[in-house]
Length: 115
Length: 112
Image (cartoon, rainbow over all chains, first blue to last red; front, side):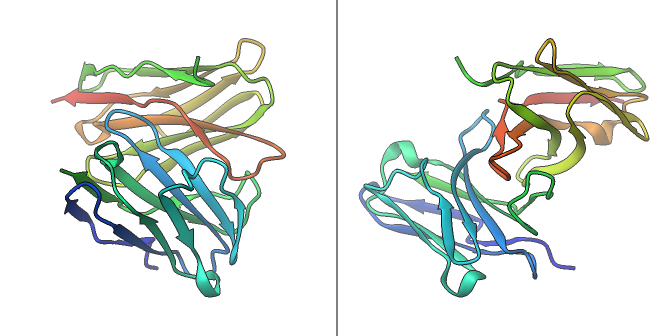
């Protein structure tokens, strides 16, 4: 069974440019998460989706970040415009449901460098 | 103060040693406790999962939760070079399913 797929794996952009990350969750997983992981830190939740609905986006900086999960499968996270401080790894995870006992499976992440 | 505190290490041990990793937390509402392992340039993978207090053993790994002290531990017996990774503790509240709060992660190196 394929795991969570993310692309691109690496992205280097100039500050003020837009950037987008794509995630394909494990088949059948209704819940999708985007996390931000700074160097030497644990992941921090940005947004959670249950099917197409964002059930928790309280940690998403909405002035420059946006996310969508059309048709309740793939998801895209966008930053516009990017800032130097956005350099980090962006992780996508999926699970069968929202309940805390459902294991979250993580993708390999997209490593963003903003110059 | 962060909700979950974890010593970042790095921690270096010889092969075969017993490794002890731990986290402290401040919110007594946490009821689900997890340990994730993250290899370099990879996403975290779930290693151990515990609900409420108690111990759980899986092969060379033992997870302990002491809710009265707000303290969780992961023990690795007979450590192997392949255990070299960053270990992240994570926890969540019962009524906020899926919202994991992670510790900073401890970088472990097991030397042959």
